[in-house]
Figure 1 (cartoon, rainbow, N blue to C red):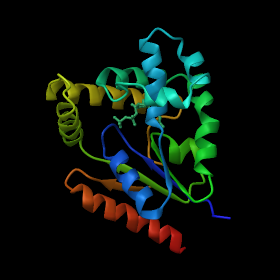
Figure 2: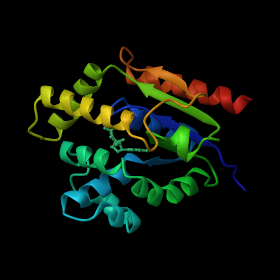
Figure 3: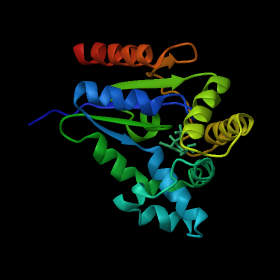
Figure 4: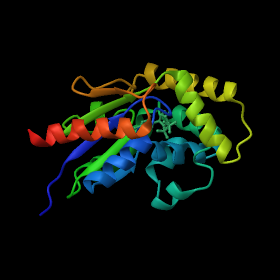
Length: 205
Ligand code: CDP
């Protein structure tokens, strides 16, 4: 049977976690879970008037394919529901089972290395300056046709980071054994190579 191997990728908003995680998963042939999507799906339901704990407890795979999950409004709603302990608890088992699936898994989020998978075989903490992260997110949003200014994106990123860092439940912080990759002045290809090198070193021993 294929072995399990969990890679935890955490970091602040728009640091490049998603791009790095997808590339790492493809490189090693592992499955990938963007855990932010779970919180975004619950946040989207909050915006539709649903009670967030009920939304988290009844979340379906279809909910993860809803329109607009990448919008700035949904991102803010996600970080608001993410402070609720019962919401986080409702999403825990799914994430843990995904992490231990045969053949290996990459999970990206905020608390993967600290809370969801404290025993992950490899842990990365991907960061970049708030300015650089805002630039990247602004470019993504502008390309998708969103009407938002760069200044608003920067303000959103900072507000979300503060809420994620200061919350009592599973705050955003690097695990003690995480390897930090600061992508502020790195091309994404270089960041991906750095991540792969860290993981290969862990696999080797
Ligand atoms: O893509 P981006 O980095 O901007 O955000 P995301 O990963 O989609 O996460 C959206 C929000 O969900 C975050 O701001 C967190 O509040 C929350 N989240 C969390 O609390 N724990 C996770 N493991 C993943 C996301």
